[in-house]
Image (cartoon, rainbow over all chains, first blue to last red; front, side, top):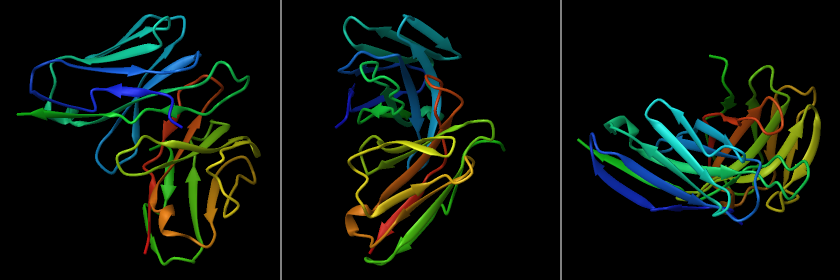
Length: 114
Length: 113
């Protein structure tokens, strides 16, 4: 079963606008990772944020984490056509010692219109 | 390019045939993972290796599936007696240590006809 849920399932915005995607999860975590996937391709790692961190930046990306609400958000600023992709959050499970697997949500399909 | 590589990229097979996929992780990564992704869904965990030891297997990994990592480097995933429901993207990932980023390969897309 999947741990997380991304919201919205699909998002369409104009180039230059900001895009915000949300992720909720169920168990306590050690870290949360965001990935991008272009159609039919592999996943590209974007950011890892640890459970003791609240915010992290990488270029035009800003990730927040609220462990009390078991939620995270990914903000892409000044969007570009090349940002069109599906975005996934993935979590481990801190309740299971040594658990290595990532549990993914269903993703948000982001479309940037030129 | 020193990223994760997977071969083949695409495989079309007839129901009942066996298929084998290969994954080469990033060279210094001792952890290797296999995931499966169907259309419109996020990846689902299949199995995990630390060096050559297979430490975790998902209930999704039926007895028709077997994975190996004989020398702690590359890994193979074999599916015996393929079924149409096995059609999916099979993704491999590797990481340097527990709690570190998992980096994914381009995937092998399997189509069972």
